Length: 347
Ligand SMILES: [Zn+2]
Picture 1 (tube, helix red, strand yellow):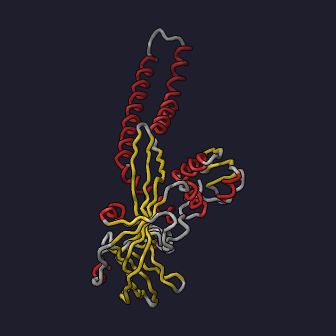
Picture 2 (cartoon, rainbow, N blue to C red):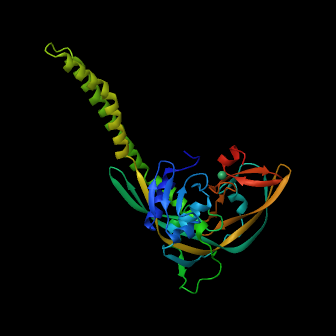
Picture 3 (cartoon, protein in one colour):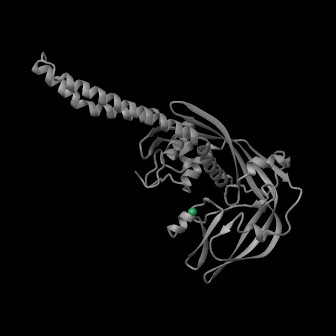
């Protein structure tokens, strides 16, 4: 299997392509698709395309995945609004650094602050988990459109504020025109949020699988010992004996096939569909920071968000994941802000 090929991403790619009219064949480590002219153009792939191999890797952050997400979400209704905030924090940001966002190393100094506007997206997704049973629900996640970081609490709290919706044609120019990377970040965040919601469901399917595998093993063990003892029967002909011995020898393979069937039965397939995107313009406070780490310096900007009343998390500058614990790391002569995993691997 290719490094990083993810079953969820393969099944997402297959579903998206099928819905858009492609003929799709799903292999364990890749998707083979016969694309329509339009899909060829949009995905920048040949007519007979292989997704998930080295030429077209299907991994987080890859342009191909972003294009697929854009395709999956192109019919999602988008509404635009401004959130009216009654007040913006004026001081006391020092205390929030180390509380909302922790820098694991380096020295920080706040150099300035300014009121500004930032754009956010709240994405409503439907999830459907199919296995021996099904479970579905809606999930709403909020992200900062600028860096794609997940903003906990935004999706729950924006409705507590006065919201001014913009009519089509009256949307102010603050929103980035290209929506793909924000949608991509929101979809990936929604996917992990849906998986959290489904944790009990996954556990229950695993429990049932373990239970059924156990009883299958017990059944075959009982069958084997019963057949073994029947060999001692005095009236058994030699041929009958040989037949029974062959059956006993086949039992382990038969049991393994049953177990594979059970694993298939309890496998969970999750489908996530974006239903609506709300894009918000929010007045925020920009907090300008000078960071010194070893002999290097850099400036960075944090955002105080009046809806969550907290500093927005950052995005790891290598993998893009959301971070509230920031690991400064020197690459060349520049400081990069990384997540723990990227810091550990020295990216
Ligand atoms: Zn990272």
